Length: 256
Image 1 (cartoon, rainbow, N blue to C red):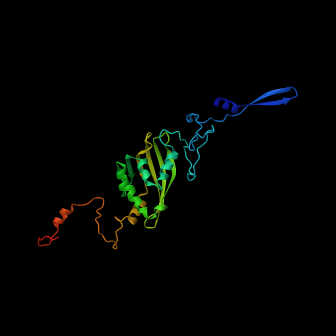
Image 2: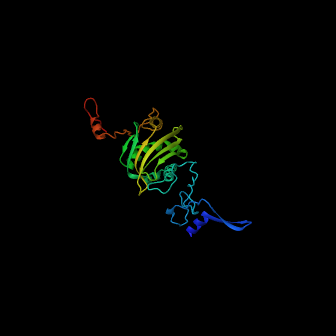
Image 3: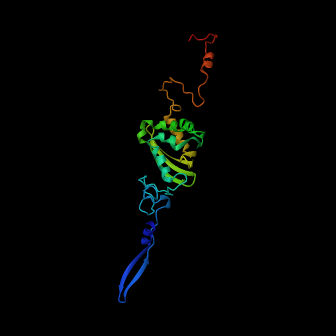
């Protein structure tokens, strides 16, 4: 049946009357491309791929992804498609919990630079607690205004590495606007479709300024009552040992 449709599209036969009788004129038309063979002839539509059900290959629908233009719109990928990458970052805008399935728990994550959250993290939890969560709490008072906009995606699909330029913007707890572009270099696992290695490059002065203005650790003030220990990255000292050093100048210890 498919072969018959193909031949019908390729060859049309027109009967042209002439003074000598009737002749057959064969005119060959350029055949329409058939559906990707990996569609299996099922006729099932894939709105992001070549299996659209009508037998004609066309570019995938943008799905209103902010008008983003994909360098490679294919979904026939060994690793992840560029559309999958776009959606993965955009999903984090309203649901940060998806981070824990997008990134493998044993990820090798490097935040490049010289600033408070820079360094190499050997698993997802250390990156989340020490870096991502530390930054994300700066926006808690205006969480509804936090936005993520992928601006460029390179490679991916049949390459295990992809590069993303991502715009993060919002309103910080201080009331100031935040607008930054980060570059993520990511290696994907073909089976799990997760990021397993990441190197991200951020605007260090912008991050440091945000932490300084919004994080209690940095932004001390005379109007703050220090009623709880905040030791910083070095952690807590041995309080019992310090208490043993306390006393009056004549050697007597405090009663309590």
